[in-house]
Length: 119
Image (cartoon, rainbow, N blue to C red; front, side, top):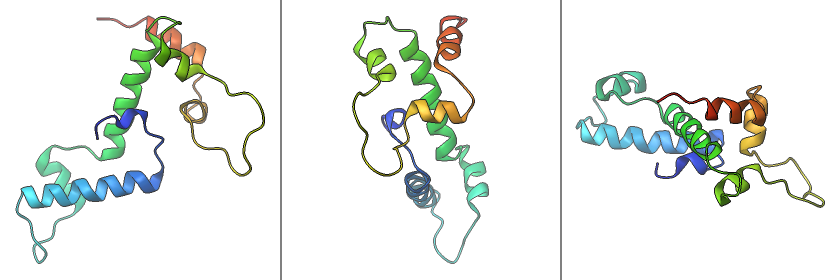
């Protein structure tokens, strides 16, 4: 999960990560095939949230951290960069900007919230 906040996550990648984490947790708890438990019970026993929730939390933390940096910082510039020219055929790839747009957030509002951080 290292660096997961910068990944372009899709439902298939999140599912693959979750399957791997679940299998690791089952091995740690020594739960083998005939003895099965549900995933929700597994997460409850280990106090581990689903991977999608953890990735989303890390993403929000990273976005806030990056938006608080100065405007000439490379990570900040990469986050707000707009490409020029024609795009490739087909459906556009998911980007952080498109994900935020789907969540009804805009960059100006996020920048303001990040600067008003308490603590």
